[in-house]
Amino acid sequence: ITHLVWLRNDLRWTDNPALYFASLAAQSTNDGIAVLVTPTPAQWREHNESDAKNSLRAGLISHLSKALAERGIPLHCLDTDSFESAPNRIRDFCLENSIQHIWFNSDIPVHEQQRDQAVCALLNEHHIESHIQAADLLVSQPVLSQQGTPFKVFTPFFNKWVTLLAQQDITPLPAPETQAPALSWEPLHFDWETKYRDDLWPADQEIAKQKLWQFCHHKERHYQAKRDYPIEPGTSTLSPYLALGALGPRQCLEAIFYTCNQEEKRWQDSIWLKELAWRDFYRQLMGHFPTLSMNRPFKPETDALTWRQNESEFKAWCEGKTGFPIVDAAMRQLNQTGWMHNRLRMITASFCTKLLFADWRQGEAYFMSRLIDGEFAANNGGWQWSASTGCDAAPYFRVFNPTRQSETYDKEGDFIRRFVPELAKLDAKSIHNPKPEQRRRCGYPDPVIDYKSSRLAAIAAFDALKGK
Ligand code: FAD
Image (tube, rainbow, N blue to C red; front, side, top):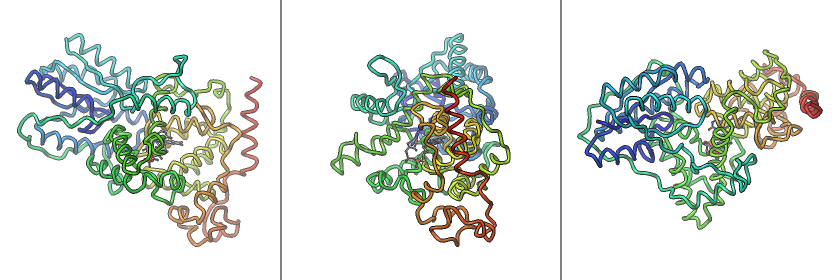
């Protein structure tokens, strides 16, 4: 074996450019490939990655190793703990195994890029060639305006992105060829895995793919109408698979093409496609603006805001005990399942940053520590959008009213009933903002803040930035 494929957040064997092209290259010289994964639990903890995500990751690595073993491709696991120790460990592994080529798909955040550059530099000293494939985006080249600058607003980005997408060959790449008789296989276990909702997200790339096609066959056409209602299973819930790369965005695009073709509509008009464009948008931004990976706001002037650091309010938000039923239901969904509906992510993030006026970085970190689909670019983008510190952000004076949002998007209160069972008996009118005596009867807390005055205080704080 002379070719090593290093997998990170691309835990799949189909449509994996590094794996596919390494296998082609090896075949052409009658060589073999091996696959390497380098768990870095200390690093993931530093990045606040959740137990749920890490457990799904563990399951996917094990599942991947089985599929590769069936093709005669060995998977090696090198515990590297942190990114800093990765280069030396990988170099030693390559030298011990006479590896001459390393293949991987590029990562975008700064820390990951630094790790990759260090690995390439060190391997280069030993004449081991690095082959870096494009990152996991639908349009991997920079999407730039006519002036050659990155877009800071989504809609023009999307228009250019769709044009570029139409010019690309986006057929998913096949799995690597079988290279030898099947290898014996035992399930892998890692000491950093814990429990997660594997009933909702089985660690199996094939199931992810089935979920994708079922969604496109049955739900994609209703996506626009249903996507904003948390009680409806209206979105794909594929995000954990996309975050860890068990599913690639090109596979999603293939399913969109097929579905739109069947329904005789233009694929460019698929509303679901737009969500995949948002995914690319935030990832590209992260590449263009490295300070985003360094805890800095996209709008530097917002660094001057003095966030209100009220620990007990923030704790109530984390635990789903704010006294705002829709916010609490959402936070409990996150805490219990590791996932939260997009409309609720917007409501809870707006609540946290505008009404509690908590630093968006605190909320971002808490989400990351709980989300099974925690993905740096999307999470950072979503938080900065909500806090009005970001790129193409919500205007600062638009503060979500949690009660209005609840009445609109959970009209009957059924989502609240599911996650806040103490309110289950309240009628559809009062459940969104129970009266004091109803709260007492149900054992449900009073609101931690007053909506009106908190909203005005947030707006005033942003207004005050204008003079600075
Ligand atoms: P669908 O509606 O079916 O969308 C399909 C896919 O498109 C998603 O799986 C996801 O990969 C991508 N996508 C959808 N919306 C967005 C978006 N706004 N930005 C980037 N990609 C998107 N998404 C994450 O994947 N990881 C995160 O850590 C994350 N944190 C968020 C934090 C906040 C405050 C907000 C407002 C949004 C966040 N999102 C995040 C985006 C979005 O909420 C989730 O992608 C979506 O809820 C996942 O559910 P789904 O798979 O059913 O999405």
